[in-house]
Image (cartoon, rainbow, N blue to C red; front, side, top):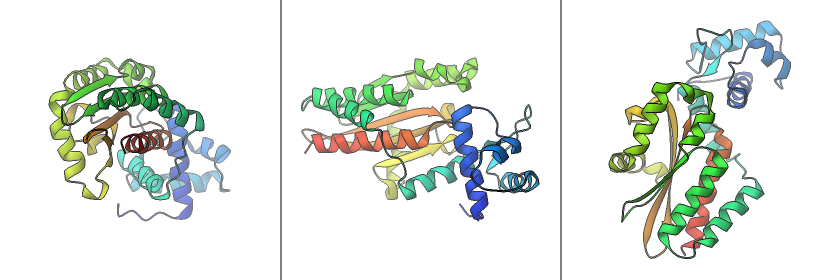
Length: 250
């Protein structure tokens, strides 16, 4: 990303992302001083937050004294997460995914749908499954996103609903953008906010994993939620579901 951060700035940005994901409230220097793990004066925290803002990693909404992550800030957080692999999946979530997959036997369509339903319930996000060769799409979880404060604005919800309704027609372009031009992450990709080429979901994050299905089929699972999603949880869930489907298809 070309941004060099000190250890303290890395800790601070990590804290701001996690705190904002948890609370949906802009994070002020007072909250950082009270909760953050490093020992620094309020003035130092303010200076470091200013440096992160100048680097384009956080910004200050007009209505608040606190800061929230930019797409670039989330990208830094996600890259660090993926590189370290720190996204353990809760054992109960693993069990739910395993049971959903087991219940479907070796039916590619059933496996795809069951995995999507389990992922949706666990991530509380919108999930779309597809069996690629047959273009069999299963979409679930649009109503779950209404629980997020980000989607209470009618225009944003309308755009997302439109995307949801027409996803089947957009999938070919999305698949091309997500996989074939990103060979380093051939079976797993994340696009955050404006990184997304699909205009009507440029305020959201999209996680896509490709996996095997029985009888030579290939499937994809797509998780869509606010950029303020729980990345550690959702990346872990998507990867675990993908690996479990691969195993079930051997």
